[in-house]
Length: 385
Image (cartoon, rainbow, N blue to C red):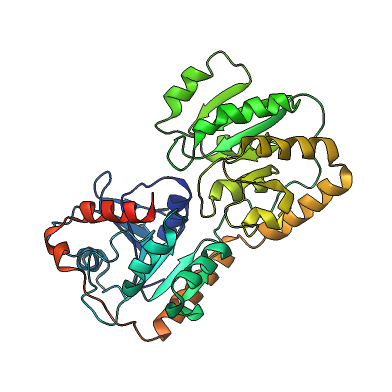
């Protein structure tokens, strides 16, 4: 969409957020990041054509406001002023003021946080609209900041590439069940320190399993050492493309043990490949996977309850429950196409542009003397991340 710039902390940023941002680059929208691997162009380049999207990475001096820096950079590449800044997880919002009073600022929420209510209330005076990756986050925003109004808060169906073709037939029986984890391999938020008690609970429940870890992160070396003598635990590292897809197609279950999430793209991709999600109940039964089967949710942090989800499916699901699960998966994933995503995104941008800009609150005077990095650290503390 013309006139939109996507603003992130750094690039590449990894995970589902990067996957979504790349979709916008592919259709020619600009992206500004405050840290990363230099300035480069990104996108599908056909012979004789310019890249459809561009990325600029730079460092803003403490006395330059984030919106002004991004506007200046995007005007340099595109020859036009941006009319809407989309701030991913709020990075830079509240630190700077948009110079053009008519330009819109949109918060794009890709994650939940322990201190979500306090954090989003602090950001609300600086935004004209909010994009949410799931319906539960939208409800949290509206409860925390009711003065925003429902007409400014939207849900986007995050796109996945192979959402149209999840398997129909149930997986074959016999042999160990394959359970997988896909995502950042870390303890903060993702809580992979819970993996050992989960595997122990599976053993106690009599489940014959193999566990596979797909991804990279700072906890990977310790996990490799810890499970070096356990042949049931396999590490794939980072994979992409066909290799990534082939691994997912071999999984019967997809396991999450995080403290909080928005809507992981890896969850959508795993279900699209046929896996049953074993997912924490972050929002009182309102998470996306509850629409598949509420019994697949388990209390956050309760590894015995997570293992019980696997045991129950293994011992009670016959052809009819499997057929119902596949039917629901196909219906839900049909919403998560690129076309649906961009139709929802464009409609949200048009709705925000049609509304008057909200009154601007200037940042606190102390921010004049504070770098964006330090301001972000205060925000991270506020949201409990």
